[in-house]
Length: 105
Length: 105
Image (cartoon, rainbow over all chains, first blue to last red; front, top):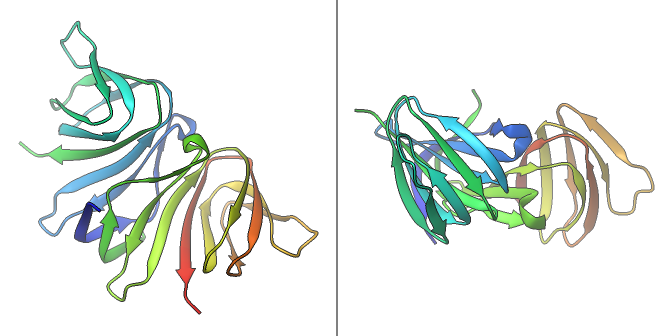
């Protein structure tokens, strides 16, 4: 089973959209941060502060990346990157389990 | 902010009830295990293998413990203990953020 070792986990959840999107913050020894999150079916728009790499561990969803006119489809696993200070849209079809990495540039 | 240090986190979520209850497994250096979880509004029944200590970090809910005829009400924060190999019922009123500790006996 995939796991993160020697990390710090914040006990309180990050809660968005009435709990339909939630995540847990994990901080690594080098100070970098990831969140482990769940998105339930629905449509959401998010904004980034830093660049974000979204790794989909499970789920069926569509993603509209900033500046794109085309929805990206992910069924099962996948990955996409969102630049800093940008907005992106998600259409979640089934319960989606993700890892979001925040990348300082 | 409260946090768990020097732990291992499994990257894949535990998903129950179509994602209305999800959790992340955290393993401590001494081998003990906790889950950090979210429950969305609804009614659920769970069964235990080991003794479980449920710490509610946020939420409004009612709990029916095994052998009890009375629902316990929690608004905000609270804690209850469920014995091993038992069933308990939950009525979740608002998004509930919990820490579950699994206690070997």
